[in-house]
Image (tube, rainbow, N blue to C red; front, side, top):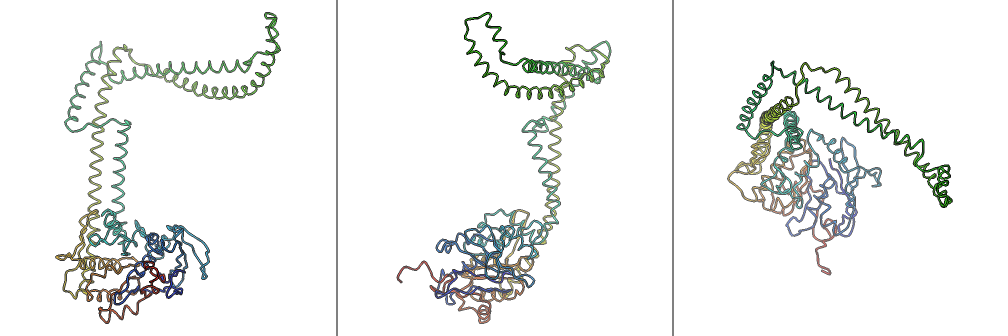
Amino acid sequence: MLREISCELFKENKRQRPPVIFHKGLNVVLGSIPGKAASIGKSTMLLIIDFVFGGNTYLKSEPVRELGNHTIYFVFSFAGKDYRFARNTADAKRVFKVDENNDPIDSMEIKEFTDWLAKKYDMDLPGLSFRNTVSRFFRIYGKNNLNEFRPLQMRGGNESQKDAIHVLVALYNMYSSILAFEEQLHLVEDKIDAFKAARKYEFIPSAVDGMGKYQENIVAIRELEEKRDELCNSGSRPINEAEVEEANRANEIERAYTDIRRVVKGKQDDLHLLELNLQRGIYPTEADLKSLAEFFPEANFNKLMDIESFHSKIQGILQEELESAKQKITVELASLQEQEESIRNAMSEIRPSMTFTQEFLTAYSVLEQRINKLQDENNAFDQRNKLQEEKKQANNRYQEQMKFVLKEIEATINRKMEEINDYITDDQYNAPHLTISKFDSYDFETPKDSGTSTNYRGMMIYDLAVLDTTVLPAIAHDSILFDPMPRPDMSRMIEIYNKEKEKQIFIAIDKTLNCSEEAQSIIAKQTVIKLENNEQALFGDKWSRKANR
């Protein structure tokens, strides 16, 4: 549990506040009892609690803008052992482990820290993110999760209903029961995506666009096969398909052999030229120039000798390049010659039983290609339909399992909300009701009552129900939720909060003067920090005050 929070900037009457000490159950951040003080740090204190649970909303708050970056020190306690940490607003992506003097010992990334909290709180459940889950149950002004009509969702209700319901399924530790069905569905969806990509890049033929075209292809295939049969029977004796295929295969191999011979010859010529250059050199030698002088005695051979000397220097560099090129071509030539030998062997193995004219083979190949193209189109159509049917079946199985899981969760929450609501309203008014119609759709309402107070009360009851029926370790409710609530309802809500003895509930509240005596007694006992105007605000001042007032 969260045991302690402190900060050097927490002040009261110009003196540093002692650490805020928390306990199991209800923890109250108490504002002005008669409600005569606002903007004193109630919501801010809850945002700081959210901050030590890994949240980031506090970073955008007014205190950080007004006071600059600062460090929040905090202590979590599990199984009787304290764990001390620090998190600075300037480096909020890291959490530091500290000793009893708040000196840093080690650090970790914020994700590592929240994963650690998940394990300590037994919240490391399949499909569950600790931070994403806890955050939605910390209803604090500024966090954008106060949409009373969409209590399951974050971002002011703009988070997808599917994602919000997924969190609930994981929180109730029922994700494992749908995981296999979900994986089957994703597998089929991946196959469909791969099929579409293969068609897009023409690795497979495009499918026909409907059953009409599919039937037309069947008729066309039958006609083409008849023409092919007529062609095969047009000679002195009937020809079977295997004989034609063998002849075509022999022709293809012969063409391949001609092609590989041409490439081998080219590589051999390249190698020969390189060997000549390596043996004789590219530039003239001194002996070559002296022989030239016999025919041109007037030429400036000293100049030519200088040039030849320069070329000799270059020759050393080119020699290495020529050797490298020779080695590369030699390797390539060896590979090509292996291919040539392989094709030559294949030629010797294939001995067609008949010799066909090129005209016959061309006509046969054209018919065969048209038949294959139409068959491939129909096969692609069949494959697409098969995948779509697989997806439909996988989705149906997933939906059925999800429906069962969601009904279980829905019933659990509604039973608990009914119980809590009956206590708060003295069994006089309808309880809020959650309807999860499918994996991506839900409704939340209090039947026959859409008033502001009722809607906020319903959202708070929902949080309490989830807290009581899952491993969720804490919730937080800001004073804005209590403002429209009748004091008798608020008093009973305080009594409900106080029934929690193991987990933690953090609330910010004021205007409690008209609450019941029992509620006021609970508040007084469970208050962890008391805030008032000006010097008794959380940071010892209200910077909204005009100067010299």
